Image 1 (cartoon, rainbow, N blue to C red):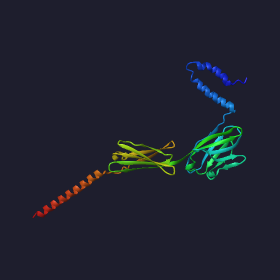
Image 2 (tube, rainbow, N blue to C red):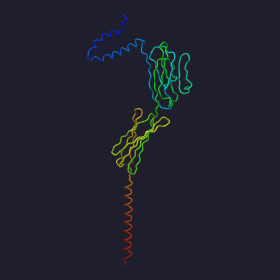
Image 3 (cartoon, rainbow, N blue to C red):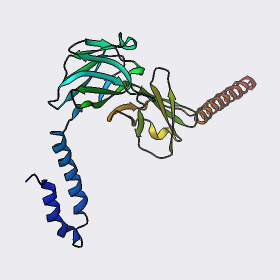
Length: 283
């Protein structure tokens, strides 16, 4: 009696492991045994449920933490993960209530007062608030049980799309500014089109991405629609622009027309002068 169940299973599995082709069974059994042993040793598996959050920059944000255990919790502590060591931000206990560290007093607070479920709220997020946070449940007799939740701050894209004709080519420019950096792609028909893209980071945490299409033969795009696609946080947005259908001159063509008009004027003047001279010679 009291002989562990996994020892009995182990004896039954020995002949199976000894057979050819049964090598993959051992690791699977070991993992299941480890999980079973941990549950048996601890009575139940402690688990902290958290969720990563994405929030608009300069707006309130919340992070939640829930302990899925019947352990008696004495203190809940929220920490910010940093390169050297975590930094305490705020704690909650029945004896002392909410205690916010001085560096975070005007920045956040615990908005769900519980020892099994805890929520912190940032009043107005800034770039410094982006990162990962730990919630620690200090339990009676079992020590600390922790979970991690990460906060990502974003800025919606601001997009501009325009075009400009030059002497021998056409430039179509699409610019998008957002956080995190957006990705620009194109839907355009035709050949002889080249694309160049540049990125510029700003102090406010946003990034501007500018993509330019260089069209070698502008006449091929007149009257056609171009689509600039902006990918941001997994969502694709289409921005459309139709090239102006108005009458378009190239410089060489314009020079040719002007030269022809001047030539016609000179010929007309010459013919008028000859006719007028002939009339003067008649008796």
